[in-house]
Image (cartoon, rainbow, N blue to C red):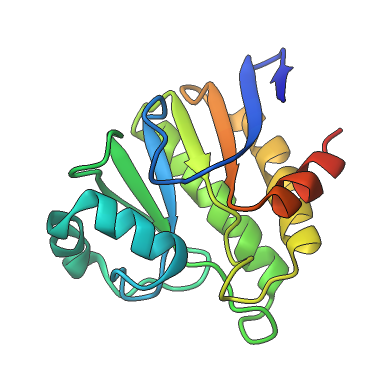
Length: 175
């Protein structure tokens, strides 16, 4: 399940699990809504686990635009930080492929600027925002691969997939 890219010693992992339960990861990524509120899906799980302080900290950072990423503390989560990304709504936010890639790239660069050693992502936009999982996975994996050479501090990148089917799609795209 792990692959190490030797030039920068970054490990990329693919697992099935709950993004809000990654105690060995410094930074988790929230597939946020524009107003950074509790919402459903990933945002709901993260906000419920983090407690009300997360929404309070998010309030002055909102709204964000598709492709944008902002960072907060993790509050009651076992992590140091939460990076909130607004993925594109498939078929509405254009150009959706570039906006989705921006989510991953901006989150990775923000985590690196904060000198975190590890980051975990959900499949951004592949749930309620309707992005087809195969296309979303291809963009995620390519962007992660392309961004790794720019990272100085991040040593572990984990994709946390909600379903076995999504995990299989990501695994099939692995080089």
